Length: 218
Image 1 (tube, rainbow, N blue to C red):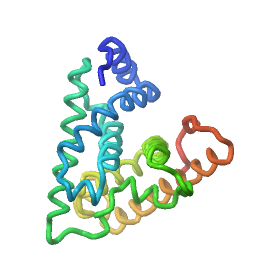
Image 2 (cartoon, rainbow, N blue to C red):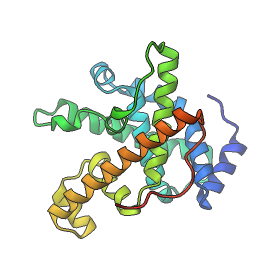
Image 3 (cartoon, rainbow, N blue to C red):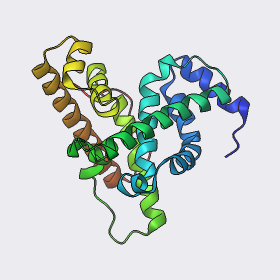
Image 4 (cartoon, helix red, strand yellow):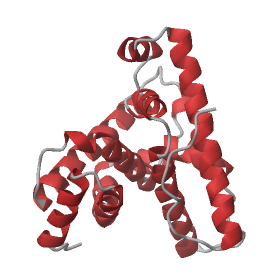
């Protein structure tokens, strides 16, 4: 998809200045390009087992979390940065998928686990299903951003970067049991928030973004 350089670079500047709305719009502009790249990069068995949409959602989630590290200002620089994130995620999934010692709990992409409790529409066709999955994916990324910072950090370290709890404990300066407990609480809050907002949107017909602000820590 051809995107105007001026528009993209204006969004980059706004996002670098702290606008979450600009960052969200910016990432969605590149979704289709990322989906095409994911399909080209993923093996046939990975596509069947995981699917390109889940990989793209986790790429966008990583980009949201680490945008403060992005130093570029142009469309091409941003696309290159997203591409590196996507390729790294695909490679990690490939290694994990083909590993004999893989943890079966991690065979399901993170965004699929979060969406597990969301209801599908009966009798939906391929186009409607694709639209629903896209909306769910966007909501998952948005609700992630509403979590307290330490919840986002532990989710990223464990589920996206695949770090062991001994490593997470060292990074976050906690005991291993405390790191495990924190991860469990973070995941539960994220899942609960996503499912609650989805039901709210379905009941009101509001397809807009969730209201700004973060969820309170239980």
